[in-house]
Amino acid sequence: MANALVSVQIIPNTPNGEDVIPFVDEAIQVIEAANVKYQVNPLETTMEGELSELLQVIETMNQRMHEWGCESNILQIKVYSRKDEQASMDDLTQKYR
Image (cartoon, rainbow, N blue to C red; front, side, top):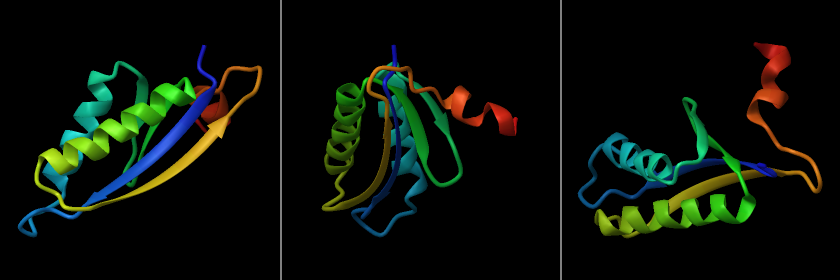
C-alpha cells in the first residue's frame, strides 16, 4: 500500500548546453524502470508508493544525469505522506476529473 506521493522536477545542467528534454526523458525512464505508479505532467512527474522507495528513485534519477555528463542538477521535490492510510493520486484528484 502506498503511503506517499512524491512530485519531482529535474533540471539538468546539460554538458554542452543541449536541450534538456532528452535528459528529462531519460530521467522519466528511470521512474518507469522502477515499476512505481507515476504520472507525467507538464512541469513535474508525480510518483506513488513507499516514501523510501520513491526517494531512492529520485537518487537514481540524479545519478543518471551525472552519468549522462551533467555536472549539476536542480531537483524540486514535493512530498505528501500519510501515517496510517493510503496516499493516492486518484483519491486526491478525483473530484477534479
